[in-house]
Amino acid sequence: MSVGKRLWQYALQFKKEMIIGLVLLAISVVADLSGPLIVKYILDHYVSNMPDSGLQVKPLYAMLGAYLGVAIIYAIFRYAQFYMLQLGSNRIVQKMRKDVYGHLQKLAISYFDRLPAGKVVSRVTNDTEAIRELFVTVVSQFASSIMTLSGIFIIMFMLDWRMGAFALIIVPILIVWVIVYRKYASKYNHIVRSRLSDLNGMLNESINGMTIIQAYGQEANMKKEFDDINNEHYKYNNKLLFLDSVTSHNLVGVIRMLIFIVFIWYFGSQEIAGELVVSVGVLYAFVEYITRTMNPIMQIVDQLSRLERSNVAASRVFEVMDFEGEEVVKEELPRYKGHVQFEHVWFAYKNDEYVLKDINIEAKQGETIALVGHTGSGKSSIMNLLFRYYDVSKGSIKIDGENIENHSRQTIRQHMGIVLQDPYLFTGTIATNVSLNDPAITREKVEQALEAVGGERVLKNLPGGIDEPVIERGSTLSSGQRQLVSFARALAFDPAILILDEATSNIDSETEEIIQHAMDVLKQGRTTFIIAHRLSTIKNADKILVLDAGEVVEQGNHEELLALGGRYEQMYKLQSGIKAD
Image (cartoon, rainbow, N blue to C red; front, side, top):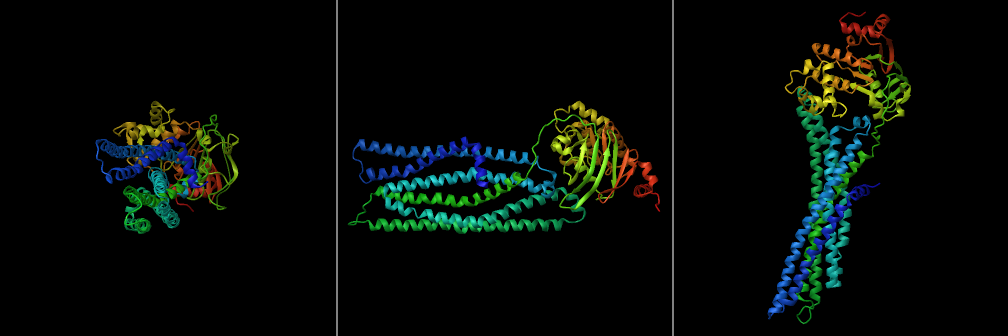
């Protein structure tokens, strides 16, 4: 479906406001065009034949009053139509933003892997704002201009059909201009919107990575990269400006000159015996209406750039919405027992470049399974598959004997919890970050969860306690504090299957004791998967899987793997400071 049709469908959802606005606009146009006809009547009946009686003077005052009246009607209805179109446009864009944001919740993690956050934000905010301009300004001006031009042509034909026909030369000129303009403007606008998206993406990335940029002295390089994108954005904005300015005003000026030349020639050729065959009023009306044709033409030409920007912006918004997602469903599943099986699982992020090869894992109810291995060995990919951030390429994953692909992603995650290496905290408070504003998680439950994981020892010095404000990503809290909030969050949601992704790798030794206690609390009665770099934290795991290049090369408990004398023993000795052979 074309972009225009999809925008039309959105407009139809709020057609009441749009239709009322256009009707009010039509009334204001009629009132505006009535003015010259009233003046024509006054000129023909009163100015050329000055009234000599009181009765004639009264109709003159009545006509002057009518002229004032249509001016007032025009002002009132023009304001009312602007308000209604603004109201309808705001509701259209509100609905569109709601739809886009809702669709983002349905998209797989792979979508966000390939598109930077700043670019997504640009499409939800900047591009939808450009679409708002379409409905507020472009639609209003186009409708007003077309109504005005149509009214002028009708009136001119009524006054003198030959002059009306001459005035129609405007139409083919305007059509040709629109075709030529759109050919170039569409290309330039695509580049401008794309560069604006790149600027947002880079700005977002720079702010998040400012510590690294400054630590490695990359300020100049980042500034140059930003300037390059900004300069290209400026360059194509200037091309659009040149396209608008070199043609729009000149075009209108040329049209005006052509019409006046034809007008002067026509009326000059109609002179008989030194007198014009048309009245002074008709002459005035023609001059007035010809002059008035210039404003709607100028408005149409001026709105072409906005129309193209809106069209390009809409195509970018719909591009996001066309990316296939999965409906968020609220199907309720009984709480898992926690029996997890990976059966001959293969997985590749792209094509056949497998990062997991024939993985077979069984975690019985209540067991703790640890995954160890060097960076890139496939530990995190296993957890991504269990959480269904991605789906397996081959093989299957079962929970309590049922393939996880038999249910939606949201349903599968219903009884699962995760604690990340770098926990993500949202803007709010400690309490809201534990409960995630879920009405099922009461304040009492939040306090109990924090107490159970030892959060009191770390959070007690905060002035606001659990109501302490948290800014984006929890940057005002220490790593240990953020991690404890993340542990409390997992405990409050009471998952049957728990994933701990290197949860102790970024904290000090004192806090590690608290975290280790929190881990022991969390693991009770749950099937737990631990991704660990510190092997000292997984000695008590029921089973340890050693991964290398996407394959399980060793498995067993701590003692069994040490006795095996293989890769796990080497890693353990290296971390323990024992010289390995």
